[in-house]
Length: 273
Image (cartoon, rainbow, N blue to C red; front, side):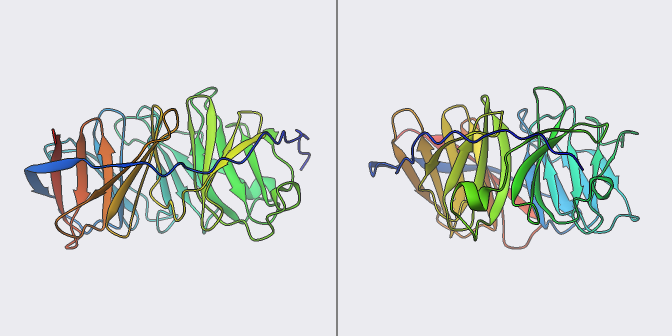
């Protein structure tokens, strides 16, 4: 595999300013889905994609089932990227395969077999809305790589363990948004790159597992608390809920929360303080 060498540009590391404000939410509706939800994603329209092992159930914000997808051949779904609702990506880590869907959850012909690029240890993937490419982080090469559907490598960062002096870098997820590539990590905060894989800055947001980027807001949910960071004003918002949820996603002024029973969702709306 021939990889394109793109130098990293070190700009600065940014530490989040500690200013706090609170928001409150009220429950407006609840609905259940017909399968246990291992994890879920929300697209830009507000549709919810519930993943149960090898199946995806797409429902609207009222809980009405729209479409379903399953593939018994590739095993358990590792990751789902729905940042482009017209082109969801389904990642099967154990098989090193990425299946491209359409908005009806029908599989397209141009699935991506990462094994053909000797990428057997890909940790996480992300959709690129710029050119329908796919971002990924490979643990063996320790780098961000972007490929197209023809299995051509079109961008790559170089060894981040060396370039960032982070030997134990452990990414949780990648998201392309607003002309930037965001990488949340286990213990190194959120790293931000441009679309040429050049490093720009770091945000001291720890354990950002369920990362969302909504305009200037960087949103995470961890340990029962929703955290929102404004990258322009540097304001932090912490939201604690009256009960524990397995996971929470924010969509506009609403919250979509998965209950501990793994089948029931609560929809909450932000209220004025």
